[in-house]
Amino acid sequence: MKLAFCLFNYFPFGGLEQNFLKISTECLGRGHNIDIYTMKWEGACPAGAKLINVSFRGKSNHDKIASFAGNLATILEQKQYNLIIGFNKIPGLDIYYAADVCYKARIKKQRLFLSRFTPRYRLFSAFEKAVFGKNLKTEIIIISEKEKINYQSEYDTEEKRLHIVPPGVDKDYIRSSLSLINRNNIRDKLGLGKNDIFLLMIGSHFHTKGVDRSINALACLPLAMQKSTYLFIIGKGKQKPYAGLAKKLGLQNNVRFLGSRSDIPLFLAGADFVLQPSRVENTGNVIVEALTAGVPVMATETCGYAVHIERAKAGMILPSSKFSQKTMNIMLKEMLLSEEKDNWKKNALSYSDSTDLYNRVMVVADLIEEIGAKKKTTAINT
Image 1: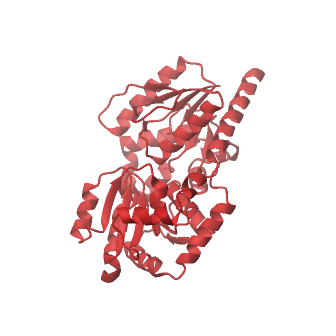
Image 2: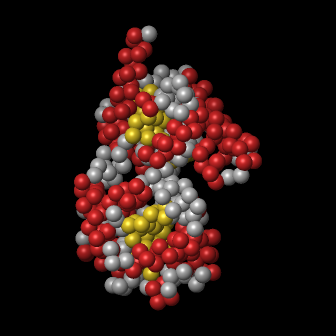
């Protein structure tokens, strides 16, 4: 098939982008042709795919996206693709890979009523409705059971158009790094002692991921515990305000930013706990990565994959309907002192051995082929 893959921006270390790369590589490996349409691309393009930068104008982010979408529609009208597949919400898609939370539901929950009258809201809500609205053709690949409920609540999207797929963790890649040698090496490189506590956060967009929440919780630990507890943050984001917060709280030596990394499993091998106190999170892939590595997790219930912590009995879930920093402070202390730590690790490994956390890419590629075949049959019969 000839496929058009569309997304706003690509940089190598984002969760959506990593899944985009894996899915496109799998489709290319199955013999399909792929043209990639984007506003901005950082890093190497999948071998065999054609990268097309679409022009756009505008000062604000939503103006740029509106311009991109309009120019993209004009280009696609002149092409003949079997399927148009979007990794962001764009009108006119055959398939949408739903990596984002429901925008309309999020704004209702987190913003004032007047925010629904802004140009930004009008654009993003219109684009979302153009994908999820009733009686539309777009088939939707859902990666979060929780967000499926949110989307259907807002748009009454037909069940038959929604296809839930499993997480896409690379189990072999993670497990191959889980050795005592690797654990000791990475902790030595980070300057950690044998009894020091290694807290790990992974992800870009530090505000969304709740880096400030973790720093504040670390600051509220008893002083003796605080001195031997270290928070390491891996990902792309604006470090300065969070480094400033750590310094203000006297934690400049306990909070460290490591930038984007491609050797995440080594850090999972050395970590004692993973924190994911996100404000908004469709899934939270690091949660299932941590469970696969046998690392207990604390995450907000807003994370789509927090359900796996509960099912695995491998950590703690923070209430997020009305997040309380005080509650997180208390729960972090309880977690670090818990006698369940060893059981959490065993439970995480057992759960990740008995649950499909791995086959997303294969399932998505199968769905693309299935939907493409159905569209072709429909065209022949009409």
